[in-house]
Amino acid sequence: MALLFISKNDSPSDWQEALASLEPELEFKIWPDLGKPSEIEVALVWNHPAGALGLLPNLKLIQSLGAGIDHVLTDPRLPKNVPIARLVDTELTRQMVEYVVLAVLNRHRRIDELRRAQLSGDWQVIQPVPIGRSRVGLLGFGHMGQAASNALVNLGFNVTVWTRTPRSAGSLTSYHGSEGFPEVLQTSDILICLLPLTPKTHGLLNAKAFAALPAEAYVINVARGAHLVDEDLLAAIDNGHLSGAWLDVFDEEPLPPDHSFWAHPQIVMTPHLAALTVASSAATQVINNLRLVRTGKPPQNLVNPEIGY
Ligand code: GLV
Image 1 (cartoon, rainbow, N blue to C red):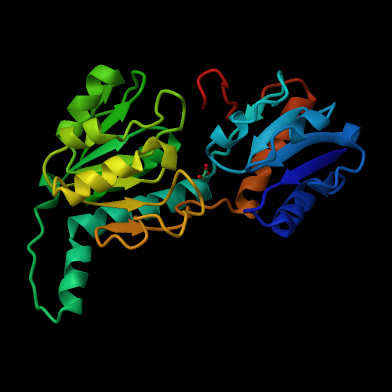
Image 2: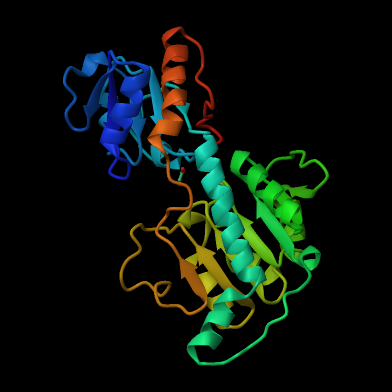
């Protein structure tokens, strides 16, 4: 039996090694070398070419190589009735927490302004606002959102959560749905997007949302580029309403060389690396899922394609 690996982002040799240590008899195929397509039970995918998975008649599992599965669902020829699983992995979550804390603290301690002052030889002391008065709005409260909120609360930030559907956020103030969206925006000095990308969350960070944020708010997007309307963000920063943004994800990746984000002094950008999958950590979940689907059970972290996560 075989696994098909399709990804330009992840290392096939790391995955081959990690999977072989758990299930040595599983053959490892790298797209486009299918061998005998009928032997492929599981496809391990990140941005697969449309139609590729339809070539596998005995496919039992589509396993995303990341936390998101929007890249799977965009395939118009995706085989029906094959379960799709996303990764929920401690290493992935830990990296996301690190990254979110970095971006939030960068804004909280005004590092970008201090750096600009440094470059102009200016000894400029900026007093930070007391941490409990720094209000963080977190959009999305899945595994990564919960872990990020715990870390921020432990540091002393005042965290409010928004989810698309009602969801308990423990002792934190939380809002949900379109009625609750303006509420979370109103109290977010720092807004973090950690939502799954679905038709309902596409373009959510737009001119109207930015206008509802407090003056000098800061936007951090670590979810997907399509959550955010680029021109609306640029306009809201350039007209002085927002103080800046930190972006890890973009509608088009790599970001085109002539895009205004690259050189914008109030935008920090990184090339979609907030949380990168580590094969040695995530391989156990893939093999466990394969064992579950072989016995007719649903995989862990099964996705509902109807709702998109
Ligand atoms: C990364 O963007 C992921 O979905 O894991």
